[in-house]
Image (cartoon, rainbow, N blue to C red; front, side, top):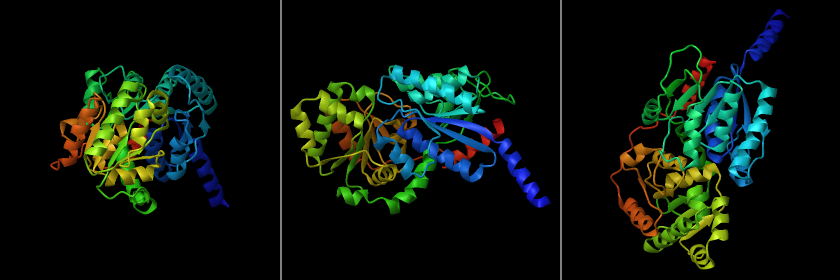
Length: 398
């Protein structure tokens, strides 16, 4: 009886002393990134930490959100705010209001955010207003282009954070250049933040789920493509999709590329991009694009299928920040349809190349990368154990 009583008391006090982390996510990349940290908490730190997951619903399409929770076997969110499908301003307003209610109810010890989305900024602003320590994972990244909403979001979030986890040394250097330096104070705050070089949490997930994709994905067979025998692309950024002249150049570039060589192009089409194509482009280019036999347009892919496509492609063409890194993890070259990138080390090392949104440039640079073979892949992003490091530092700080 004494042993049983002791076990009950131990369990009770363990629960009472758990630190409560309120994690805010809202977009596909954040859902995936959160998997690594949530997995680490559940398997190694469950007696010390309780995670409360809030999904803002920023990606409101079922195929872009629910699919990933189910496929990656993630814990379901405690709250889903359902704010997708409205303007950025209204979206942010609704997030702030809902998060304020949740914080009042849950009383978390800290708020954790990933990356650079509206959901990230909403979590950061709410943490500041409630004087709750903010943890930013993927801190310090800079494109130095404030016309990009993501750049504004990440800069503001960094300057409100108590704990900043940087995936690269260049990210730490960026923070230093803005006057953010790591303090040794026992309790971290936005006035005295602690800054860590942790490696990239997406590398953790890419390694973990790569093994699963070998047995659980048949996407190459379903699409009829061969290993190293196709080009993979994704396009979704507002600055590319919402400007019809840029979107037209992208489609024309892909048509020229498909017609110039033997490799088919596989394009899992983002709902936002699909809508823009049909609403803003003329029928002639739409028919020419979708009618091209060497351009394989699919529905949005699950993460395991995307991993399989990434690690077996010849070249990746994207405007996504995350996919640039995933290309690197699987030692694939990447053509970036942007004027800048937060992952500047990839460009400096020759693994990625920036490209103007001009069809002739897309064609020539893609052809060059397909033919190039002398790539090197230094360990820019750590060793795949970022989640363990982050969890340990959070527990120490709390």
